[in-house]
Image (tube, rainbow, N blue to C red; front, side, top):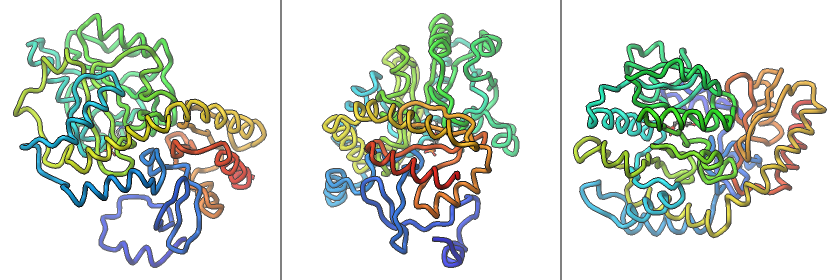
Amino acid sequence: MVNENIRSAEENLLHIYNRFPVALDHGEGVYLYDSEGKQYLDFAAGIGVTGLGYHNKELDDALKAQIDRLCHISNLYYHENCGKAAKALAAASGMDRVFFTNSGAEAIEGALKTARKYAWEKRSGRYEMIAMNHSFHGRTVGAVSVTGHPEYREPFEPLFPGVHFADYNDLDSVKALVSEKTCAIILEPLQGEGGIHPAKQEFMEGIRKICTEQDILMICDEVQCGMGRTGTMFAWQDYGVRPDIMTMAKAIGNGIPVGAFAMTEQVAGHSLKPGDHGTTYGGNPLACMAVCKVLEIFEKENIVEHVKAVGPYLSARLDELTEKTDCILERRGKGLMQGLVLTKPFAEVNLRALEEGLLVLPAEGNVLRLLPPLIIEEKHVDEMIEKLEKILA
Ligand SMILES: *Cc1c(COP(=O)(O)O)cnc(C)c1O
């Protein structure tokens, strides 16, 4: 790990990532290996992307075959992978219409444009949005505009106008911001970057009710918490409320860059029309092959059921560790999306984790965030706990 070689190899990059001092080379299952062959147990999954882990033969073979056939044609032409991927995502999500993007932020942009267009089509005069404090929706200008961190927004202001921030899990703070100008309310059903905060049942239900009563669109950002991570295919499905628009990315392509926003028929019929939105790469045959195969493997290998089974084991082992470790204040999370609130600085803990061969992530509020591949088994949880015990000792 380390080192000066990485520094000199990086000299032409724009240095705006605080990279960890390790150069990874290849992966197998739930393990990654650095350029010197050292093994790391992966509880980061490329920030929640590689749900199926590394070197999944079925997925890799399908992608290789697709590369040999066709990677790109633009959206001027139809390719069957695109229709199949949309059908599979609609079936998995209960949404009706899907638009493919290249990333999570781009999915958010599409969702915001859809909400604005819906209001415009209805001549409702609505344009304002309500977003949540401590939310994270990506780094493009629209996404930053609804991200609840002043430090991400202020240097780029003035941003997209009419965005108000409420407190997550505080329905009264949302109600106080709703007006006849509100066109959408956007939230993550489980806040990830913001420190691993799951939404309360009454919060999700309350927002749904406000939206339904006032013809406001509810947008769920499932980019991180979606695709099985919390024990249901999409996190909102655990609450019995359906959003009007949802965004996805990260794990839907298992590492091939692909995102999507999806909506109900009702929204689709009154929003984006031909010419309103587009992308050159979005949903190309390679990206859509990734989505099709990932969803096929999810179904065949009962990935969501597996998360439902192994999730409580992870929570229980983390609770035990929290109980007996002075520098952990609290565990929060759901399924395989977990956070430990630390009293030691994360950066220091992370360096020790790298030494011990464990990959973890930070989140806001000095939280150690765990987003393992969804295929982890109890023995990997045990191995991680053993390493964390040493790291935090
Ligand atoms: C990562 C993330 C995004 C942005 O996705 P990118 O692919 O990095 O643009 C948006 N929303 C949430 C909840 C995320 O975790």
